Image 1 (cartoon, helix red, strand yellow):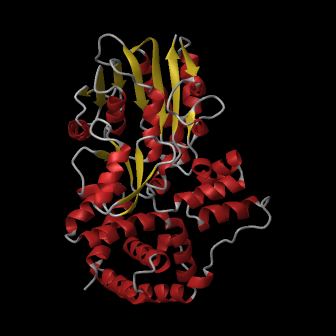
Image 2 (cartoon, rainbow, N blue to C red; image 1 turned 60 degrees about the vertical axis):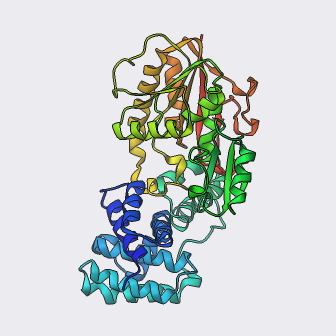
Image 3 (cartoon, helix red, strand yellow; image 1 turned 90 degrees about the vertical axis):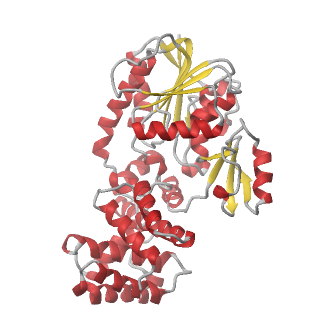
Length: 449
């Protein structure tokens, strides 16, 4: 019988590669198929890991089959990918079980004639696993094709993206970046200061046998080093939130008693962090355009005990439905997500460089839409989880050209809790994997004059 985790992983990967689902929804569906927590964990690891190493795995499939991927059945490609990932990256999984399950999956996928082929490819890979035919680190770093093959194939990234990083940051930084993106991220929490403190939360988790370490930059964050905290503490004591994401709300600088707008608020991590900064006084209007995301936002706000927050569903265009002006406005804009490839490996293969201009144009329009409700002297923060300048610096530049009544605020000169190392030479929050060991996030603060 094929291991349930591998069956679930196969169905999730088929849904993702066919475009029927993204990674979060595919994993949610796979969890519903499984009852054992260990199977759920293994299935998630196989899916994420297979996507993370997909380009390397495809390179090996082509090498060992002597065929281009286009000539192989889509089902067979997925089975080979997930099986090769397990053989090469999951030492605790017996190789014989992986191969046997791959053959069984081939039959389950109604491709019985390919079962011998799959078996042969996997066993050939096993025989060469110590000397895999992937591009080596080039000695001559001026050999651009060799450098791009090494960074893109050996570390499983799209060539167009590593080419961009190479041009902006150089070889060593890009090599560190792609290695960072291939690490399995640890679970990161943010203590909800409306209910507890980071120190108290860490102690409570320790009482349940859960090990944590304080985050390096975010003042309320904990990185989980052992155990599973998701079922062990009081509801609302913490939120699962990446450290770089936690830093964005610091750039808003919300204070008690102020009027704050969070324009793209779901799932609510930054909203509830700002509610903590405001000591649950004043008020925050938290918005989203998607009905399902609004419901998730309501649940997050409720569980956190953020009584100063009103959740509002808004239309995707047109004037904002608010009278008066806000002291602080956060635009955490929809973006490519290219800064989060470690946590969201499917984005590597879903995004194309040709999409960036349209994303950038939409982000400029969103920022202009938000500008109209910022009070004189108020702060407008533009943030993304993108690594690319079209979505970051270029958007800010276009906005400042269109709205001369705003200026860029140098956050280095503000009395805030933002650590200086994550602020660049212009006072913009910019986290970089090769420099800060964080996902690539961007946040610029703009002041209405």
